[in-house]
Image (cartoon, rainbow, N blue to C red):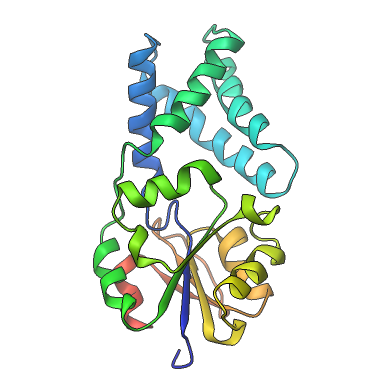
Length: 228
């Protein structure tokens, strides 16, 4: 890793605790709109549906608008909760509006960023929505650590598309040989980076059994210190 000069991070599920912040956002939105649903039951159904829609979104099979509406519609249908399309639209908008009000980060985020900031140029590559990613970073007080923040929407395609990584490398004035990607998603972050010739560190916070010699796997952010 001696040749590494640029460290690219994913944001959601890697530094910014998406699930915790998302859960709190739904709690707020449902309370505001008097949606009488057991939150835990809703989330149990919603999470895999949301995962499914994000995969379709990465593969350019659904639009941003279809994702935001469809994941809610499918969840409400699955739990047999009668709700109007208008209310689903309102919830979808409020969810995005309030999501960055909650800014839980994974343990070790500030420690690892403080450790890395004087040794490397730090950057973000994210598939998250353009209008909210900077807000998340500013509100959680991590924005200043990063030199370049590249969203997939600004490029026009999503990770793992090579165009996103090549765009980010060019924006950062970095070479693939001296760059490493750190992220949670094997498909989008790790395989995407490896295919363009970058190195990669997988944030395996769920401690899944993964066998590969092509990348490093860590179960906490602090473990990254062992490699960089």
